[in-house]
Length: 140
Image 1 (cartoon, one colour):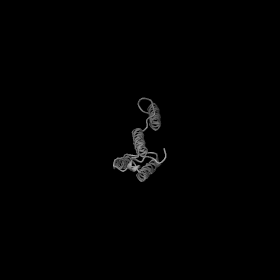
Image 2 (tube, one colour):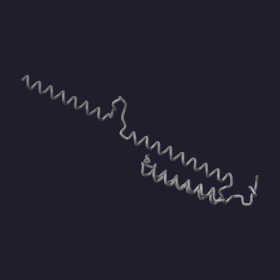
Image 3 (cartoon, one colour):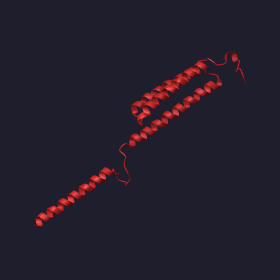
Image 4 (cartoon, helix red, strand yellow):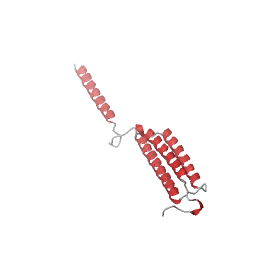
């Protein structure tokens, strides 16, 4: 009798401890008492990708606007560069549709931004000016 009571109590104790361990694992708590996210690294990486892409796009847009303002870009060059920027933005929206930009998508965006940067530099330094023969703008 004493032996079976001991086995029953030990069995109940084991089941209770397994239940507590399972609920703790399901709650996903880390060692420091804070909730732990398994995708925390991917989340931080996604934020870094987003910041880097946005910063590059902003710098490129500023370079295009400056070229338009100082006359180093013709109207046609300006339109082509803006079209390229819109295509990159559409690609970015497509990649962000699932909420995350992964490393492969980032590499594709980065390559597209590299090409756009090269195109901006080439168009701004090709010695074509919006105002030929230093005539200046039509209306001041």
